[in-house]
Length: 277
Image (cartoon, rainbow, N blue to C red; front, side, top):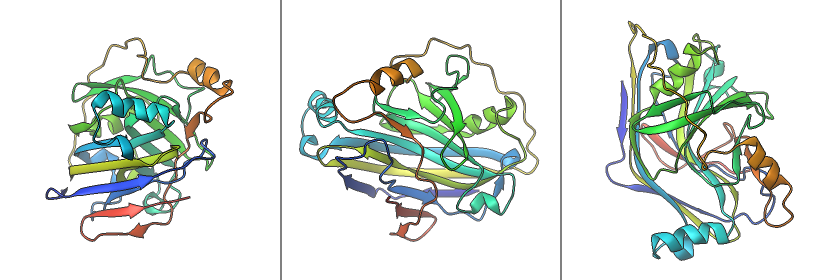
């Protein structure tokens, strides 16, 4: 088992990108370093993650909740906050710069940021609930020819404490990906697309708990009856509508920054990294 708790400290990142809103400009993140990697997902018994986080326009940070939300809209802030994993059928490739698979568990995202596979996915059919929140599945290939699976929540979150391993096991149990793959990277951060004013991303009280069970015997996950896709979760028709608008920044597809070069800013089992493009 690998476990880490940040002992009450916080991780902040400020950013502003006024141009080229269709691209990911950076991914400041925390990455778990563990001797368990690369971990066969057939032996993944626990993937617990907890944190409190927020993303706000810096000048509105101390204002009311409604004013903070309005500032995100006024300053055209486009972002996502994700728990991110990379995997591969090859044990060595799982920890390389370009593994075959990526799993993104979105925890918060702006209205005009869209997952890979927005045009080919069926979130009205493939859904699962974790910690009382329903997640909707999107999948497709990014520009690096990686297969990307994105789980989007029904509503934006600011605090999480749950075991997310069922969202990994759902994929092989429902034939989206092979069972015989290795988890090589686990990280948490925010993809930055666009903001006309400075934005502050802050996360604290974070903890990871990754556990392995070599004798794991899986039973089928309990089925979840699909519901209509809620307003927060993107659809292709909404993407097409936003793409034709003449004002504001272009809608963004979360093609991911991948495993880019990082500047290491800490030591220990949880490592703070800053990735920029």
